Length: 360
Ligand SMILES: Cc1ncc(COP(=O)(O)O)c(C=O)c1O
Image 1: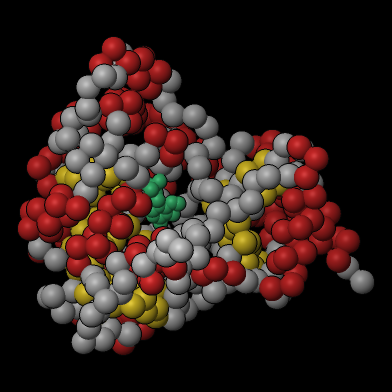
Image 2: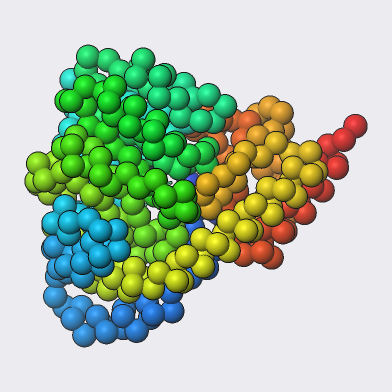
């Protein structure tokens, strides 16, 4: 028999919400934290212009994307690496800096791909408790072991939706040993940029990486473009394991185009935050426990895991798929991605109807 290596055999496939429906019924997916609308209209022209070069490999240095990011964020272009989604960068970082002799640490309810990437690298995955959905710097520092090599935090967090203030991140970095890489994953950063607490300056220390993606606020999830700001020594190592042709010419052209249309992205964030806050208020008014969110999703906390499962099933019966959170230690929670008003209202109506039906 052809057998996989032991550490892969021991892993489970990465869990996504099941989008297939019985009887071919169309389901509304509010499960993947995608943008509520397509990307800037300027993408269409930018992408169509690349097709005549589709026989050529993409730019391995992501020239136009780096230039656009550098101008936008005031960061050096040569410190930026782009990935086939930020997932690729997360996987490369764990592959380079962790192995079966050491450990990766993250908050208890962190983005699940941190764990997957750690297991792919054969390392141990440690977690630190969070406090009411908030990352706790003291708990993270307490959980550091002699063999800890990487600490991952997402800011804002997925699925918690909460934000870590800059002062807390500075305390975290100051409390970590110099041989521990801190990775701050800002996949939802654009939704929280209004708080004006950029963290890019931390990268200058040489021991911290900041990751971002164009999958969320920029609406390019399907084209797979993530990026990060890296200290040069870390970037050199990561490039050794990266696919040198990782972002297609279509992805690069689309990325450069959306980055140049800031008003559109900012409008997406504004629409998202308005719809999100309306959704949260409506559910709270109907008695639901919904956390504040700094992202494009809302986390609903039910009384227990069984209630969350019943609500999940009721939503699915009404054609709405949301994301269960048992996999990250929150079996009593469901995460709902902010979508177009019509879909989000349908989800809220379905939840309120379900809650009415639950009453004795
Ligand atoms: C915290 C976080 N990081 C990274 C990603 C992956 O983003 P990308 O599409 O760039 O791979 C996600 C996607 O949901 C996420 O929630």
